[in-house]
Length: 136
Image (tube, rainbow, N blue to C red; front, side, top):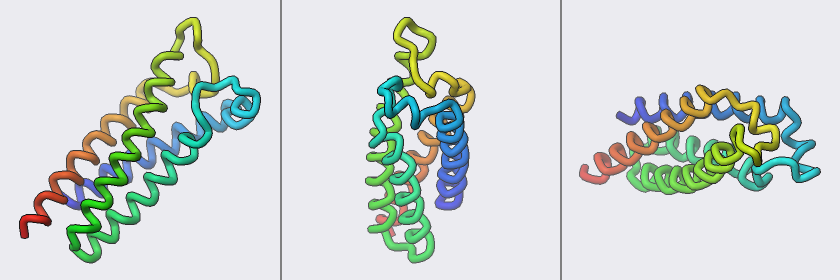
């Protein structure tokens, strides 16, 4: 299960990197400076930084087998989920509506769906792994 969580986390990271690249390619930073985006820069930066940090903690858990690392990775995932939810709702509200604006409008819906679905699977797998390692 730990390796499935790792694989899901890496797949979510790949999809997230693609979404960040699309945002940047469509002027995300330029639009941020002029406030023509619904995405707060702290969350745009914090979401992937938190994800990389959490992934590093998960790898530390896999290397050591210590339950503390597994639970820390899960807690970091909760922060990542919160940040991702803010980004998702802002993307969803502006998507094609009368308030649509920003580089995030260029996101392919399939990429957003893939990223979110794999992220949910990651959270579930990490949680179940943390429970399992705590029982031993």
